[in-house]
Image (cartoon, rainbow, N blue to C red):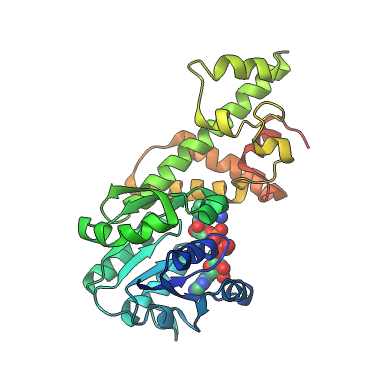
Length: 299
Ligand code: NAD
């Protein structure tokens, strides 16, 4: 049994912390939102008053936070708030599972390495359902020794744990994967809308394309047209699922990374712009497959 600090007890962090506790570890949780703290306490998790207190004296620290600025503040410290790196004892394993920009991830990695803390970035895919079931896919970046130290903990919250390479490479894998997903969803939305306007039944297009060269994961699993794939969010008035807001965030992160790397991602840029339009029109809470409403110019 280990003592683990868990910072960020929201939709994803809450169930991940519960799974670590259920696996027999002692978890010290912290969140800035009273409701998240209360929910963790109701689940039998000890809660503390600061990120530094959660990191004090533990073997491992998890963070599951909204964005890069929160991750920087929690690890490096901010204003009068002590950072986790300064508060933890040397050798504490640090695992950031937030989805954040590659530059912030690498900056925090560098500070952790300098302080003698093995660190990995381990963003996830699988959503709240995956967090609850402990089946998340974990895309992990960090030195080999840090990956080896973090793996036993990652295997509790995740079903698949993949070492993607050095510091920040988990975030790189995450944004590249989701850029493919965003672009292919828009391709599906365009093709299914065009087919319908030309008088081709979407189910017939699905029967053909799903076993032809146009087949893709988003089409098979998250088909944007109601009545085509039974389990798709399109059949639940586009209740997520994976929200437009989340897809929008990940496409923005991909664009920031592309700019920094000098990589040309014209379709990624277009996908980001379309999801910005759709999110700004007030549809952030809908599943990302609802982008077909924008493409088909429906209400
Ligand atoms: P959330 O907003 O529900 O949870 C984030 C929590 O962090 C909140 O409870 C917030 O109060 C807390 N927080 C913010 N600043 C803090 C600080 N300084 N100290 C302590 N706590 C702080 O978000 P979520 O859905 O749990 O997502 C967390 C991360 O996981 C995000 O980076 C998101 O992109 C990523 N992610 C989410 C999903 C999903 O389906 N929800 C899927 C994959 C990845």
